[in-house]
Image 1 (tube, rainbow, N blue to C red):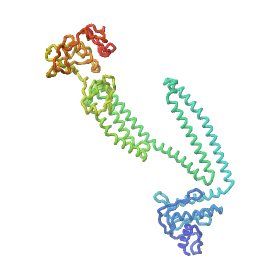
Image 2 (cartoon, helix red, strand yellow; image 1 turned 30 degrees about the horizontal axis):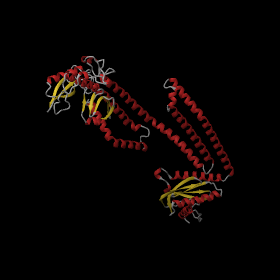
Image 3 (cartoon, rainbow, N blue to C red; image 1 turned 180 degrees about the vertical axis):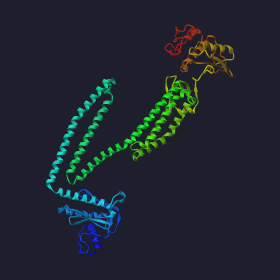
Image 4 (cartoon, rainbow, N blue to C red; image 1 turned 135 degrees about the horizontal axis):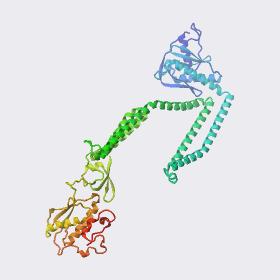
Length: 572
């Protein structure tokens, strides 16, 4: 038989798991120089013997698929193990592959097609690894049949389990002591520093958080002890030794990867720290400059003092956003798929939820930089009337005359008319109107004088500009008179008008002039006025603080003596 036929017989021997007797030939008896044809199979199969992976076969040789080759090699190894043969494991090269023997028995052949070239493997490397794995598996199979070795492994495993149990018991006993000492130390530090009283500290959840930290630390120690004992025990027995080695290798590889990740992340972390330190320094400079603008120390042409604070917040936000964008590539894990997935998820959330958000933000910019509203102004926007408390990016807060705090979205303010009663000057004061309707039989000059007299009796009205009366319209049955007054404080608008309306009624009643609001069709038989002697009819009572109409100007409309707040009316 020539060398090619001998090589074919050898590979068929491996695939079929049977022995082939080779005849004598002129070629050397231990040399296989033939070329064996093979092609790659779609389903690679891994040869495993005694729970240890040996090699992955990928080639189809002489029609034998990887599964058939693995089955034949496994049967040969089982027979050798039962016969007590453990080696030596030898290799012999042939054209296109390598033949592996144990003792004098052929076990398998490896073809160049069995090598995963895309993973960087080569046939010599795969052959050396296969020989080492096969020798170790045979030794462990032989060791598993030795009673003395099994007894020694069992004793070592039991000792490891007993030691782990003792450690767990000691850790469990020490848990309460450690937690108590930790909490006692925290209480002493907090109460000693005067941060909070002991009762408040114990009533809070700070101590609960510390107990949870101690519990988590003890649980981590327990897991480490159990993991170590289990790994050691599995490595004592030949069959479970691969599992123990994989667990030990996983732990070591994890610690090694974490350490290398920390070391590799140091340059990036340093760059991120440098970027954020620089931006923090710039933010402080920006804050100092805008504070100077807000206080009037610096007067740039393109910004007003009342818009300095929101502009500072905007510039600061943009600087920090720029810092995040620049530092993103240097952050540890920024190139991982998980980090990219989280970034995409956050981007989708911002995209789908930003339509209304951007509308509110742009409306806030419009309110701020158009200087439509200022904090402290008394305004009326829609149906809400009150003092502006806060101008935010998304909403504006207004305190009404009823001391209610109303939050209005910025987009709502931009979409409707807003009246600011606090934007006044000496030449262009803000007037507050109040109207009455009087019949044509009353001289208009008398009505003017009565309204001005009522205004003179009312506190919290400015004397400059002086109150004025205009005839707003001539209706079918009456004349509409409007009294225009300027308030000292717009936030007391409701109470000042309350006193003014009371004084108007008293003044008109004093002079027998009937107020026909809102309208009337016929003149009554007698004027509808309240005589002076009935001004304080029961249950009303005269206020001794107001002894004359002209003393009203000395009383302010705020405080405990305010007639608007107390419900009192001036007395004659």
